[in-house]
Image (cartoon, rainbow, N blue to C red):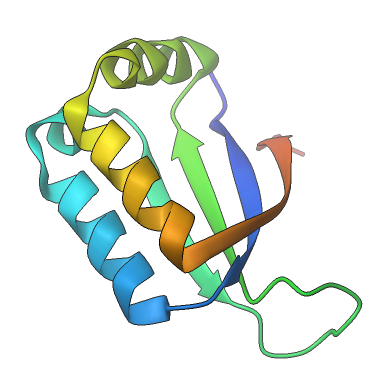
Length: 102
């Protein structure tokens, strides 16, 4: 299958804290089991939105995304990440994407 994922647009108030929280999650037991990976980008121009960063979480397939959701469902590490990022980030929007072969 083709890779798929979700991209979040975020207004990051404390980039160091946000990246530390993300690193802690991906280095955790839950993060290590997660079949996806995250790409963080800083937005350097385009002031239409208050978003300062995007985070794309990419999975090899929809089945892998489902597996990730199951892994995260009861994860203490994801709960900690969510609690920490409530302090450092404001959510702006999200969208789902698919990679397509031409």
